[in-house]
Image (tube, rainbow, N blue to C red; front, side):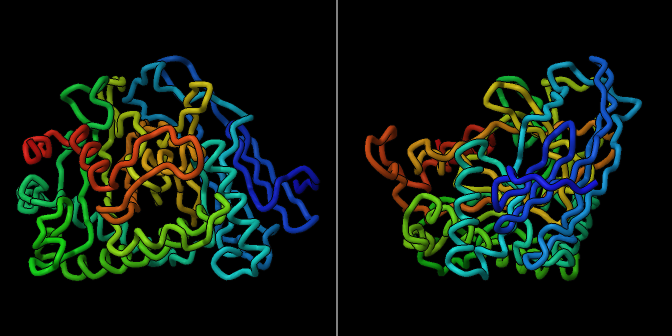
Length: 409
């Protein structure tokens, strides 16, 4: 049923967990579409609803016409979930869905309104969904397909481009190779594998000649025709989107739209496709898909598949689901951006708990400024000392990748 409600804040649409509720507003028009999500918790057994919201029908010209598709994702019958990993059902938590088209192609007023909505989300929860972002669904689907081609290879084939062989943190890491919550997961690490793809620089590039950390060539898999080309195309497109998102951040902070551009000459951008194997049996905090963490850098643009599993911790300490929204990216603030904005923006804890009994794939894209960029808090009364983006990332990588600690000691 379609309800009219004048209280929906423009230009946000909001997902309320427990109920699926989307707000949409243009001018004085507001539409709210609600759909009850089934779900129930019985301590060690979870019959979990992982709703998949379909945003493909939303257009900049016709915002109120959209639809929600809901699909029940029940926990695998072979898995047992620790109560600490069961997400709360909170009708009050709202993760905005923001239409980015007005910022990309709108008039000044539309750009300002979109930036204001983004800034509000960055201040309040540090997470939001973005739709109409300009990245074609066909390209995203192709990247997923190519990622699966790689992860389906035998371990011996993937090991030929192991990240341990790279001087610049590029290549494949095995299940457990990254540990985002070492305090709880200890030696087990995350139950996922991944591959790091960065800016592909030749040995003759000035940053490589200067032995700048985290800069150099990618390790590309062999015998996968078309793989490199698809990943490079997506990488380039996402770099452009990340640049525009930083401009929206700047506008929301009452800065010139191009304020951050000076530090984006050679941005440290990383595409990191991930594969989460099915997790069966007891699932505890000793090992989950991705341990509880905040992201290191400025911002993350995440494409997630329909399996679900992403959870976000609220300011009150409760964990809630961030369900898949078709056609969207999940955008979240990282520690560096929180530091850069002097705690105006919020970097929020999140984790992945794959209770589906199925494989899960996601495509995180990490957008960070130049290695030499000075990250000094914006505004008066700075809470942090200045640092450089590169050193900050190096310190954080060392905390999560044991192999990298040996390279920097």
